[in-house]
Amino acid sequence: MVNLPRAALWRRLVALAFGLAVIRILTPQICGIGSDSWLHGQRDVRESLANHLVAFEARDDRSRHEATANRFAGEWALVTHQMTALGLAQVVLAHPELKERYLPTLAVAAGKTFFREMRGFGTRAWHGQDAMASLSSNNGHAYMAYPALAVGMARLVGATLPKRVIRDHDRLIAAFVRRLGRSRTGLIETYPKEAYPTDVAAVAGAIALHGRVTGRDYSRVLDRWAAAVRRVQVHQPSGFVYQRMDAKNGKPRDAPRGSGTALAGYFAGFADRSLREFFTKSVTAHESTCFGFSGIREHAEGFSGGGDVDSGPVVLGVSVAATGFALALARSPAHQKVFTRLMRTVGLFGIPTSQKDQRFFASGGPIGNALLLAMLTSGPEVAP
Image (tube, rainbow, N blue to C red; front, side):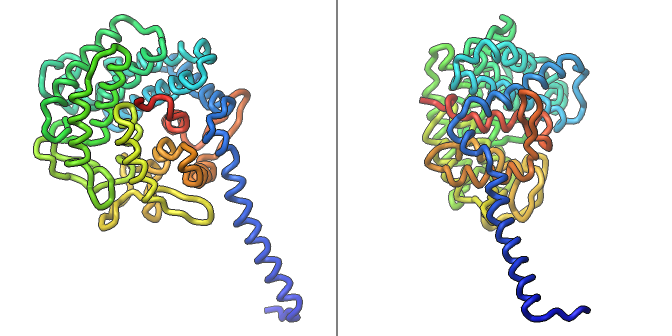
C-alpha cells in the first residue's frame, strides 16, 4: 500500500466528499426535471406522451392477434387500452383544442376494450361464462369496469363510438348498478370467490361516469358503496384497503396494501371526491423517502410480503405500482413536494426518452406508459 502524505490524503478525502455531495444534490434535481410541467398540466409534456400512445395504438391495429390464455397477460392488454383511453380523454378535457387530434385514437382504444378477446381471461376464470352474455346473473365480473370506464370517458368527451358499443355499455352499467346495489359489503366478485376493492372502485367510477354522460341519478347506490368502503374495506389503522376480500361477508383475504389503495383512489375520484381525498391522505402517509427520492410502501405497518402481479417489484418495502399510481393522487399543489419526490423516482428508473414528437419512459413498455399518461393527467375526470 502506498503511503500518502497526510495533506494529500486529506485533499483526496475532501475531493471524494465533495464529489459525493455534488452527486447527492444534482442527481435528484436531474431526475426531477419536468416534474413541475406535469404538476401544473403543461400541454407540451402531455402531448408528447399522448403521441407515444397514439403510435402504440396504431402499431397494435397492425399486429393484433388472439388473446392469450394467461389471465395476467390478458389483464395487462385490457388495462393498456383502457388507460390509454382514460389518459387521452383527460388530456382532451384539460385541452379541448386537442380533440380533433386525439378523439379518433381514443375511440379506437376504448372500443378495443369491449372486444370479446379482451375479456377472454375473465370468461375462462368464470368457467366459460362470458360477461356480456350473462348480464342477468349475479356474478360480479368486476373486471369489466375497466372497459366501462374507458367507454364512459370516450362518451363524455364526444368520441364517435359504434352503436353496438354504446348499447353494450348501457347494458353493462345497468347490471353493475343492480349487483352493487344488492351488496351489503360494497363488494362484488371479480372472479369466482375473489373480490378486489380496487376493481369495485372502478365499478363505482364507471357507474358515476355513466350518470354524467346520460343524466341518470345513481347517487343512492354510490353513497351506499362509499359508506361500505369506509366501514368494511378499509384497514382503519393504515387507511389502506385490503387487497382481496370475501364479497359476501367482507372478510379480508389479503393484507391492506398500497398498490390497490392508490389505484382505488384514482378510480374512486370518478364517483366520490371525498373518498379520493381520504385515499390520498392514506397513501401519502406511507411515503418512504431517501435523498430526495421517494416511493410508497406496499404493506401497512404490521404486514409484510414480496412483490406480485399487482404491486410489481417491492424493494425495501416500496412498491413500483403503488408509487406510480400515487402520482394521480399527489398531482396537486397541496402535495407538490410528495409529487416531486415521486417523479424523481420515476425519472431515475423509468428512463425518460425522446423521439421525434414523442416523450416516453423506455423501461415502462406500453402498459407502463399508458398507466403514467392516465396518472399524470388525472384531475379533470374527478367528480364535482
